[in-house]
Structure formats: C-alpha cells, structure tokens
Length: 345
Image (cartoon, rainbow, N blue to C red; front, side, top):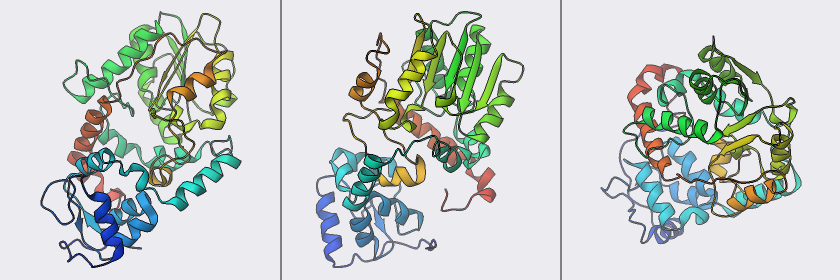
C-alpha cells in the first residue's frame, strides 16, 4: 500500500461503516470533514471500513497512507480517549490475538528482548537528537518548576538522584539507560560510578560518546544477564518493555543486585488497570511486545522483595513533554527528511 497525494476532503460515502464511525464519534467534539483543528478530514472512501475492521491499527496506518488528515492530532486523540473510544477503537481480532499470545508466550523473553531496540530505538540517533532535549531523556519530564523541555528533563534527573540519595563513590546500575541521560548526570554531578545497560546498539554507541571521560560503563545487555552488587539501582522508562510474565524476575533481579540497605528507583508509564493486552498500533509501530503496568502489578510483583518507601505520580506532565517533542520534531524535520520517507514521519 502506497501513500496517495492529499488533495482535499471527499464527499462522505453513504455506507454502514461511515454511520457506525459517526455514532462512535457522537459527543466527542470530533466532526468528519469539519473545520475545527481536531476534526478528521477524509481523503479516501474506504477509510471508514478500514477503521471499523482494524481499529487503531487501521486508523494509524490509513493516516500513514494519506487516507485522512487532521490539523491537531493531539487534540483529536484527547477527545477520542475522553469520550471512551480507547477500547472501542481496538479491533476484537487484534485484542484476542494479543491476549492469546500473551497468555501462552513470553512476548518479552530473552530471545525477543532486542526486538524493541531494533524496531524503535535503532530508528536513528539523528532523529532522536532533533526531537529530544540536550539530555536525550526519552521519558516524561518533570514540569513543576520548569519553563521548557530542557529544564523539565534536568528537573526529572535531579529528582531521581535526590530520591536515590546518591553519594560520591557509590556504584549505580541504570537498567535501560537509553542514550546515557541519567548515567551522565549522576556521574557528573554526584561523583558516582555508573553501569548502564540497553538493548539498543544505537543507544549504546551514542551513550558511550556522551559519557566519555566519566566513570560510566555502557553495556549492550539484557537485565536478566546482570551480575554484581550495586549501592543504587535506577530504571527510567524501561519497565514498559518488561511484560507481566517477567515482573517477578525483574524485581528478583533488582533485589539480588542490591545490598539490604540499597535503594531502587523505578520510573514508568502506568495504567489505571491491570491488563496483559497492548494497543495494536503501539504494539506494531512504537513498542513491540510492550505493556503498561498498573500500581497493583508493581506492588504485587515486588512484595516480599522490596519495601515501597515512596510513590509519586506526575503523569499529566507527559502531555507537555510530548508536545515539546512534537515541536522539536517539526522544527527540525527538514534537516533529516532526506533520510526518512513521509510515511515514517
């Protein structure tokens, strides 16, 4: 399937699929072929049947193929979710398939662990360098006292280090170190030695460059293969890739790598409910085999292993983080457009 040139909204077809989509949109504040920023402008007559049969996967892929457009996709997504369309927009077939897979298979096994690195994080350092701030943090910023993205990410790193009570000479393990954001910050500002692990070759290469000259070691390694003992362990934006079958193993690994008086900080996106399914669109294009943990998932899997001393939620800050990433991406897209096609954008 190839992208088609975008010309203008078409006349809406008189089909059952269109009527069903209109009923689902009723009350959401989203209009078909409307003029508001959040409105969907339909460019292909088969858009409705595709979305009806394929859910979020059809919605996302049809956008990539130029079948519809929207001035403010963030505003569209907000209204769809607020109107309870999150579940309706997932096709029954895709939900069932993922549930069966997750029930019988370990989608985040050692053998599959590097899939997300290859599919997402290895997409291109040049792209992420233009989208993120100079810290290269690829997780929610802490905007409590911040005016821009860089301040928010520096505040998040500072918050994490304060919670870990870092002191000079400590050995710190960073599980899912990304491009070395926390490792560089902790080594530079707190005098600690950091071992960071990632399953992305591109991340590992850039992290080593960024941390050159600091007491930081970056390894291309799965968390289940770790050994040694660390005073502090931190994991920022990695737990979403662990999977419900591996939660106990994850926390057992953390416990065995720390002394009795050690501290562990976990920063993750969370879900309001415990589930093993993932959105089909997210699963295919963003985080393969990923799933969001609930508070119960974390508490149940870590009990008898770790004592929860502190819980902090700043999830609403992700909206400002995402919009800042989007602004960066749009502002710098022309610099890398020759390396990526329009469908990828």
